[in-house]
Image (cartoon, rainbow, N blue to C red; front, side, top):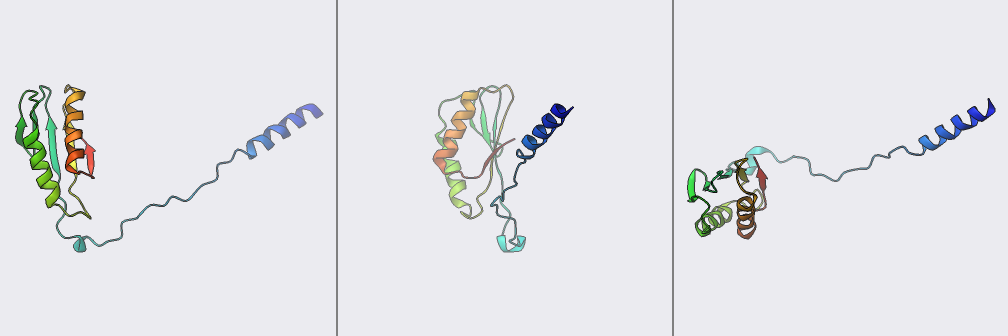
Length: 122
């Protein structure tokens, strides 16, 4: 009986030491009033179709997997340069589930070279 008590005491002592101590996260909470931000950011939507066609804001830039994406890059650089650096316009990439990953990587490379800092997938 004493052995069982010692085993239980050992179990409770070992589990008491495994408590997780919560830590503080340093995050910035929203605090700026919306009217001081000016115009709301306009999202830049880039869609990738299953055949490799790429369109930005419903304007086609590459059809059927064309390797020439210079027009897309030039327009993206123009749009990113025109946005507010403090609150950049979000770029949303929406690939088709059947599109090739290579095409998505091509668009990501163009976004990186254009200086996109606010990017997400849909």
